[in-house]
Length: 201
Image 1: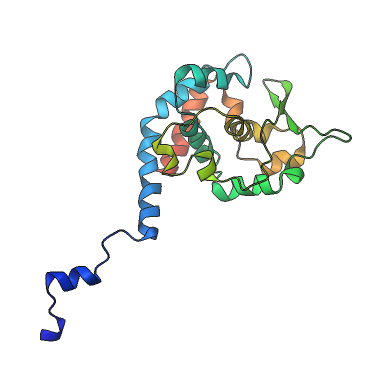
Image 2: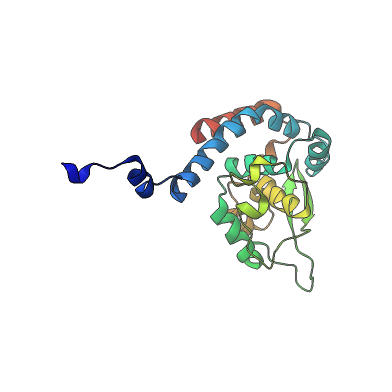
């Protein structure tokens, strides 16, 4: 039995003093859920005020001082659009958002309230990898509010209106990016969001 006895110093020399990376990663992802639930009502109020045009959300978001990266995280969770899918959208951008013949501009047409709108991408596609860390929607990034930049706007519009794209191939890939159809519809929006978050939590 003596061979199994260790002094404090011997135990400390062999002990793991810090959480392993796998445990740290799991803890960070778990801590995101309470943050989302706590900010859910304010997130909903921003969406409910968007009644005039589909991109009005950005004006309201800036006026509200709600962290843009937290807003984007809400959208990503509701669309079940994790980091891997976000990377894939950027990597396969041309196939998801084919450019018009003879045009160098990048964008997509989508339906909202019975009208067709066009969103022109401001930053996408990136030449580098697009991921949760770059968007500041991972556990560490959410600890500090980001600013509303072009990359955030691009991803937000995809997550809001992707399923309403007039291009059937685009709409199929982004079928879960549907919350934009509920902008300005408080009852339907509240039901949709709360049902989604019951599943998430």
